[in-house]
Length: 485
Image (cartoon, one colour):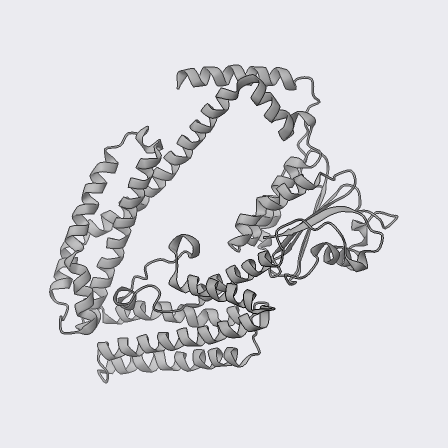
């Protein structure tokens, strides 16, 4: 490490010498920020302070425009149309270019396009425009519209009017010429640092869960002893409990291993994997001991049965509450028969939940019957969501190939790879008794549909840059382009 620091120090002195001939770069925050969020996807309380704090090399006006289009739209043409109609000051006096000093960042979250446009004194190369747009795409693919916009504008500020000695080409040449070997050392140091940060984060997550499980260990055993094994739900939860102590002992061994690591050990990637295994194992036990407690309280009608029942209803209630937002999105076919069936089921289910809870409290139905009804209702919702998926796919896809792509993504979302779709264990009795893919939820529907739209967009030739302004652009030739994500 000492040798690396010395080499890095020498390199820094050489680079200072190389760049000393260049003019000083001035940091200037935007002279104005204009937001036209017609798509309604940006959190301006977060966006505006962040953009106003970004440093540009020259005084620059930043304009942000969003609208809900379609994958077939030309975003460049739409931005020009909007500017002509609503913000003519964005266009040069001769009507042929974007105004000097201007940087426009545009987003179509439905058509899944992002675009960047600049005045002649702020323009960058096509490759750099791609770089700016790419800075936002990972966040956009995860529907993080505000953060993605901030990331894109930040990257734009780094490239617009960038001094020659800060350009990527110059820095790459300098590093290659002066110290190619040190570049590898710097990368190694960065990887070690990021790995150490990730290890500490996972360690804290694991410790929080492991502490909860350890404190409740005796209570968990007492709860398990009184769960009625004759119950279909109770017997399945008890099967999970039979491996509980073995898994706890495994987690304890992992805890001992990871806590014996030094700070240097935390920077090694194999150790990060081990620490993540510890955190996952502890989190699974923490969720399972809560389910064991709820199963005992609900099936035996203990003093805590009411909050335990509420926790079983929570995932279903969350789905019902999310239906209208799902149907309000573009291409959601909100006026279709399948959408009407979802709304009708939602309204009926709210009444049914109240009735089941009342009958459970009065002893008219057993806890097992209440869980059966909840299972049947969630199964019915899954079928209604599948029917609605067929509706939106039929409306969006132009041919059977596109429909097949979308169906595959919807099915994959339900079957669910955790890494791609964020599927996690549901800490409830039904979530323990049935596999994760058994119920089709509204968030899963949204994830599958968004991925399907993206797949179709790519199949239609999306992803590459579009530089023209369409049939309505006329002779307009302002610097700008768009691409899909």
